[in-house]
Length: 262
Image (cartoon, rainbow, N blue to C red; front, top):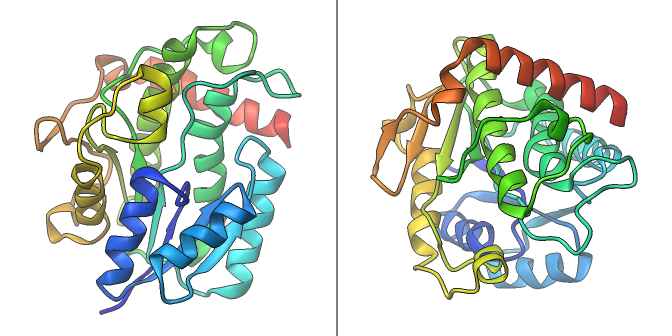
């Protein structure tokens, strides 16, 4: 049965390959990107005339506008894959004074997910891109009051999305499934090439596990869990995500930042 699936960051890397894989399986794939030109090229590569949605995820007003546009066009979204992410940027600070790694990697997918929940059925899935790189969150960094280097901010942002995955799963209870996935370390994405200067491993490793997380019955009872594709198994995330006090503080700070960013 064909599913309607939104993939953020679908103009290159794992997102684009996942979109091509799912479209080839007959699913209705919605593509998100920041650049209209890249979206048009991605749509042509995916084939079948997929819908495209443009938004700058460092701007939460853009995120809300995109969600509203999707809700106008669709009464049902079966799967949301929050794939988009950033690591290395020329200027990592947004105009509002927040680190863009937290805005794009943590806040934007949370805002988008909340805004699309009304059209995601209980049997649907929300797949969040985590990473093997995870670090306890400095709340001052999350709030934009302290700066970290590229990997420091990135690792904290990826633990933060893993934390809100767990907390949202608790809130939703009987669905939809909300799962965090490390698609595999050092895959051949633009982010890895720019951030680490290495060619990286086969992107198909990541696309395959994202397809499984979106559709495979093995993930049907995985809400709140973290899948580590480096070890091909569900696993515990960084211990800080299992700390109830730390998680509560992070969630409070995320909601505070989202309110501030409007």
